[in-house]
Image (tube, one colour):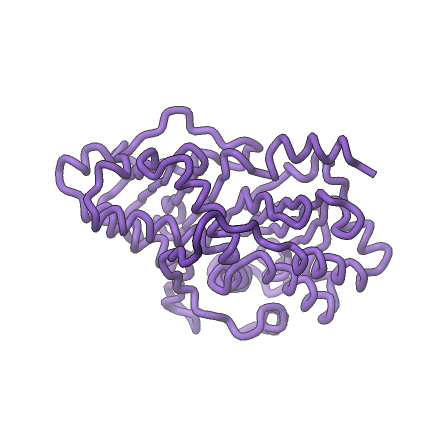
Length: 357
């Protein structure tokens, strides 16, 4: 293991603590009625604490106005980014940054995110890059804060780098949105070395496959929209997620056990967030109508390395895409798009401009 990789691994362990299991559990609603939105006192406090220990130069690098176009400049490929990089933070600052991230994500969501960051060191070696190469770098991830979590009632923040993008928007201590959000892995399954067998997005793959294989012939004809998988997620990194013509089998066309499996698959993605915010998202999906949700599949029916495949969940309020086609189908992309509230939604921006200090 190279010294640079070891240093990056140590930094990530400092940031994340002991890595938690990436296994997600089906979502269970054990509350009554419509729940309150996630209390953001902890998130706002964590963001404020993070800002307070930054230098003036770092603050100027990390902060933007809420209506700055940079807020919509999101992506999930290795590219130059604005914001403050993890590699430019001290140990104490990194701990504070990770504390902020923990206020937004579940244990499994946090574990997956930090494991994907760590995967960059493995990818560097898989691609035969030099130890000092920075194209693949576990600490080349950027925090950005939009607005002021103390002075503004409307604010947001972002964590972004290769294969990780989370965009959070808040108003009056309510988490309005945690999307667009993207998690990906390359390699999807580590094939050699000390981390051989590492499979961060295993649940997303296996449950999608299980749902497909549970279908009878008639159901499969409705579900499989193409024998060839698209080369990339269809919504891409556009500001607005659009798939104009929903395809696939409806939730109402599944039997009880298949519906349960569908909800388990959906909950794996929703559970990337904190429990209460996941519950709010699920309530909104239910209010729009579970029977309007669709599951669509494209590509090979016996997926695995060397067998490109794709699926998506789509409904009135949400699009979730999973694509594994690149690098001999050992490279996963997943995205969650809230069709009402991506980046907080247009109404949030209108309120910010109206109430801006």
